[in-house]
Image 1 (cartoon, rainbow, N blue to C red):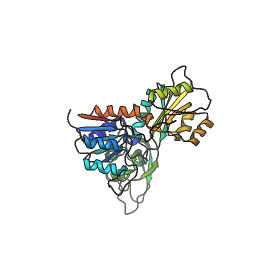
Image 2 (cartoon, rainbow, N blue to C red; image 1 turned 45 degrees about the horizontal axis):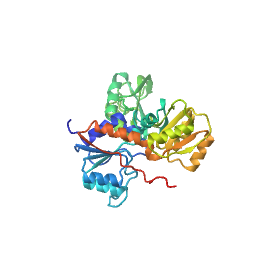
Image 3 (tube, helix red, strand yellow; image 1 turned 180 degrees about the vertical axis):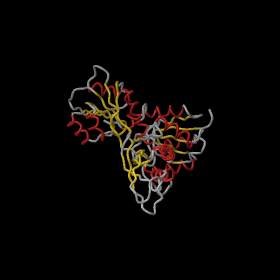
Image 4 (cartoon, rainbow, N blue to C red; image 1 turned 90 degrees about the horizontal axis):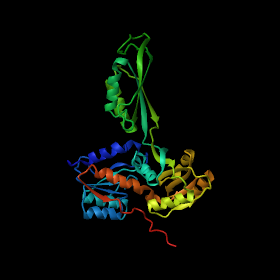
Length: 366
């Protein structure tokens, strides 16, 4: 196997879990390092804890892939200390690059949500719980049919037209454009001072907001008109789905299913029983209390997720939704194990640090 670059590893993860499917608040992708650097030894962890940093300092790697982001917010100092910033400083000092695959991997087919559903033997699963993706725009322009492919190709090269695993996505509809050039205009068609009707194609393409300026510049460059008309709309769409809902094993009750969750995930569980009939189960890895209403709307009578507060559990009971809470990290562990396998299959040497428990809790003391 040839030695990949950090960018190659990012590309492999993105093929399975497109980066654009991450939540808009989630700092996925390259957090520390250089995408052109070679990544011969790559470690994978659940979270960048003190123990994980010590492990890569003792047994050096080129790249660390983590599920939980290390730096959630922008920083203006990188100094030593027992903190997320301090751990980032130690990684930089050790020459270890850092890549985060989080909510984009939750939403991906075979990712964290599917892995949790599989671990609990759910069948006939379907996705639910959309999470707002990064800001995007829809850019619309109007082009004579003979030039529409040229304009669309230019917009694509500038960053438009990517939806999930599909590139060059556009929508085209025919219509009539009208314009009357003034005496100073240099129209491609028509005459100054006369109303002109021109058959045109309405060309629509989506783009990340970060690519808006480049896409607009491409329209101006490749459009045949002296003054091309275009519109830019803020949009939301093509969100990643963080949850799965499916049928539990036959013959189970809410309480027996809670026992199954505890056994499969190796964790104590908290159960909030709503008393409703047991039919479909929703799962959201990590902290999924924000998706209680979505789980209920998807037909679930039980939601398996972590970090559910007292008041959220009370609200779930009011919705007729039982809650099984095995803790934050335990709901993510099946998926993190899969993330290691994905990386290990695509690099010369992989180091498994996923067994280092990221939970800050020591357990239950009675």
